[in-house]
Structures are given as C-alpha cells and as structure tokens.
Image (tube, rainbow, N blue to C red):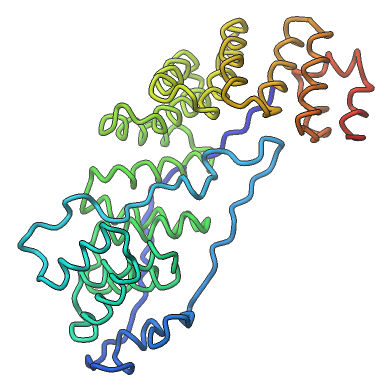
Length: 351
C-alpha cells in the first residue's frame, strides 16, 4: 500500500528584514505607529496585508499531519519570559492582558504605549503577539518585522516570523528565521521541530531524523516528535526503530488516528500482518466512519491471499467515501484484487 509522508530540512541562511522608517513620536492619529500599521481606524487593513492561503496536498489520504497549518508549532508568549524587573507597569498590564487572551484591550494599551515610545523592542514584540492572537496576521508580521529591525537577534520574534512564513509555504524564509532564533536560543524546541518538518516535507528524512532526535532529548514524551521520528526512521530504512517510535507515541496518545495509521502501515511493511490488523482494529474504534482503515485492511487481506475479504473491505471503503480509482488501480497491494475482481474499479467510479 502506498503511504504518504511529506516533511522538513535546512542548512542555509537567508537574510530577510523589513526596514521601516523611524519617525518622531506623536500623540495623535498621525503618530508613527498608527501610520505604520494603519491603526487610526483598526478596521483598515495595513497596506501590506496578505492572506494566508490554505496548504493543499495530493493523494487520497488528503491532509497529512505534516501539512496541517493548525499543527504548526507557534509560540504566543513563552511562560515566565519576562522577569518582574524587565517591564514597566504599563507593559506589565499589557503582558497580563495577553496572558488572559484579551487581545483587543492589550492592542489598545500597546498602541498607546508605542505612540510615546516607538522604539521599545518588547512593546513591539508584545503588540505582534496581540495582533496574532486576535487573528490580524498582516499586522502581526509587520510588528515582528519592526521588532527585528530594533533587535535582529530577538529569538521569539524570529521564531514567530518563521511560523508565519512556514504557514504560507515560504519554507526557505522560515528556515532562515528559525536558524536566527536558534543562534540565540539553541534549545528552542519549536524551531528545531519546525526545521525537521520542513526537511520531511522536502523528503530529506536523514537530517530531519537528526533534528528530531535532538528534539526528543528535550521533550521525550512528546507524541508528535515520536510520531515524526517514526516516519523518518521508516523512510530511512530503520523499520525496527520506526515500530518502536510509533509504539512509544501511541503509549502517550492511545487514541490518535494518525499514529494508529502510521503504526499499522509500518507493522505491515515489517511483515507483522497480525499485529498490523490488531492496530487497525483499534484505529476503527477511534475513527469508525473513516474509509482509511478499511482500505488498509483490503491491502492486507490481498497480501494474505484472501481476495473475498479484501473485496469486502474495499467495497466498504468505497461506501465510506473512498473514490480515488486511479490511486487504487496503481496500488500494487491491491493488484491481486482488481485482477480477480476488475468490476470493483467500476464500482468506485460509479460511486
């Protein structure tokens, strides 16, 4: 059975900063920060506003974990990032509002602060966080750029900027930002993981494996890291290691359909058909309306020579929504089924 797995790598540096003109702080709508962000009327879009297009993938398995924009690690604000001495009282108030997820009030407070102190690095960074939390991604990016103009080595501004670029599929720029973040904070877990995910997306599984091994040392019970290590191990021929990583990931998150999918496929690759079927049974409990476990069972029954059961599983998969006849016809695991029952391909097309 064909299995989809895309994911991350990196080892280069690209310089990318948005330069902004400094201005004299003013107390009105014509202040530098308001002109920069077009915030005199917050309903206005900033001049460089851009939308984030959805990330699309091919193949019948649709979205892969590696392509889920919602799963891209993002730092909103690191816990205990600021000591009590770092911020003045007004910024402490804004910081507290952000921790309470009161994005709009925090935005208003920070805008007022920056009207008087437009070159304050942490106020600029906090404002980027507030905009990001409120879903104003264009202004979030502008304030990240402003933060990095004021302090190019700011690790979390670089990291968040990398996440913005990664979500838009701008992987080269994302890698450069993650590298800048890691130069200042070498143990920044999200940056390490996202570099690995880009490497996996580029089918560079060996460097991804090395990055994820570092990440696992920092977060040994992270199911996503363990799952991705399983993918990389499998794609680099370390099948026994892949089985072990998937098993560990599943012990952390027993009801993950994604991990059950990967684990059962890896067991099948290892020739452990009975164990794979046991995992698929659990997968069906977790995702009872999914066609995916049924499709995999059809493949496994073909490998066992049980064409009748394979036909039953494939027919059920079609009933549950599988419709990619071209994919099925090209799947070598299902070749015995369609040789014996060619009409099943027509059933898929008609449905």
